[in-house]
Length: 350
Ligand SMILES: *Cc1c(COP(=O)(O)O)cnc(C)c1O
Ligand code: SF4
Image (tube, rainbow, N blue to C red; front, top):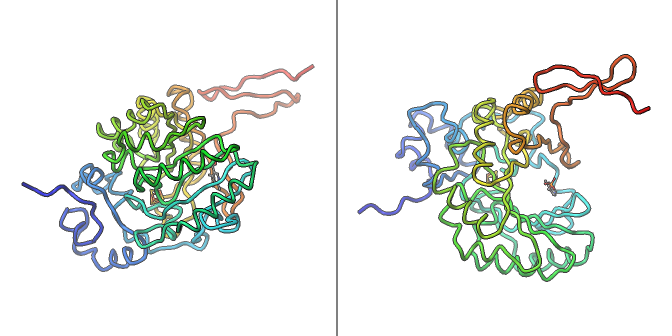
């Protein structure tokens, strides 16, 4: 009998699995020395290694192009550091904070915006730091929502998650616990009834935001994991990153959004790629992103429309950057564009 498959972490394992070729070894050694590598069995099984453009491989298999950092790319592309009052907390917007519990993930995405921070060696918050983070949240009554992120918070055991959620639940002004994760897709077996129970707290609303970028990631096992969360009363939203060669195509993007909705996951954000080091080969232009959003509008259900957002470099927060459908006519009225590109007057308010 074969042993249960395990996460691929070393180049030798990637080579043995046919995901990389030995002639790339020297360059990929350099990539792997700089950025963490992990591909879970669920994701490795999805990769068609005969396809040089496989959209799953592109997200997880290291590429020599990662060695090319462009001048605008930075280690902290969305400017978390200046907004971090205590370790683990990022407080950029008045009513919500990020709480980064761990820097470990089940997979390491080649385009990760926190790639300089995440990895198997990166340390988690100590219990003293965690106490200080809860103290910070408790001391700021304007904090209505806490976003658990990382790394991937669902790599933690249900016991630890239960501890964190119940500490948050004890803070009266915190009403919403939001979890940003890739686990239901990349390691669906972790979504157990013990975990779904741990995520919930009486009197608070828990939301889970799933990160996935291609419809193929939503395997039967992933769909069942999401169904376990939703059936447990946890609403789900999606976030995807617009990635060249993965989903920068109207059919692929539309199918991804429809797949989310079929799984009872409401599309929330389509992120423009952040300026993380060595990721320029995976970014598109904002113009291309707007074209894709126009292609979605009207052609797929309104339920399938995410908001296209840019995290402004330097720590200024997210802004919607989707296409604009309004312009002015010569008489000062408003022109509205329909989904076929037709223009229509809307009269000024008398
Ligand atoms: C992205 C982000 C959030 C969440 O933003 P929403 O628009 O509410 O999804 C909160 N805090 C920080 C620091 C963020 O970067
Ligand atoms: S799961 Fe999220 S934090 Fe982890 S590597 Fe992927 S994008 Fe980065």
